[in-house]
Length: 263
Image 1 (tube, rainbow, N blue to C red):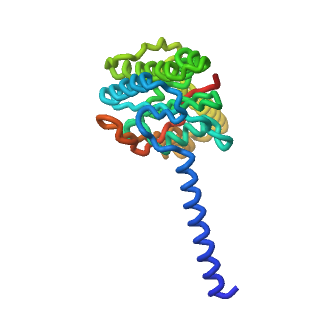
Image 2: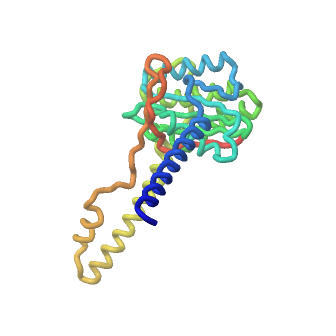
Image 3: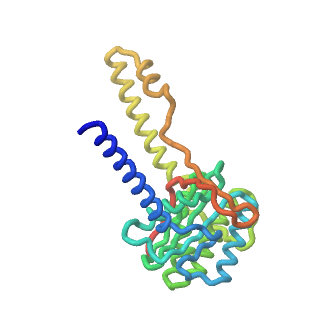
């Protein structure tokens, strides 16, 4: 293949790649709707009064703590995603919470799939670990959703989650509920991280003991293995932009924590 033909081939491939990227972008835009407010009832299942109450609680929470909650109902996520995957991607696309605090929450209810997922921003995982979120789901949300009362189920969920955040911030918000925490705060990921550290400690002690037995020193191994610093726990990023009312989101991301289930 001469240079002219090769150049034409490369140009055609480049245009094809650009076209595919553009097409995929348009397809993604169609898959994920744009936010219209704190409460996004795309499935048309939440009564107006329940929407109003949720919006008021979320706005007051935003004003007093900076945290943001987005409520979303959709008819179905389709066959391409699971509900948790869709929720994570939607959180990523919208960006919910403060950019410097990662304090967003997404409550997604896929009606035809009869499945709800609560996605937690990284900055809130300490006070809303997966176990506590699962408790809120089971005690405050699913009993109503299973009866088809989407408005009350989602309202109770918002009130419970906002109550946990408000209590941690030392503020009071009308309409919230106090959740009796049966799960130790911060236990979700901390427990896994602690187990990992214990395993590393056992490995280090074993290696250190073997080196002493052989008459060698452990100093160089220690500093060589850990001198670069520990990077196992990265920080998440979450964006926001509600302002005094709803003004859109800032493009942040969740920390991947949360809980959900069918009803």
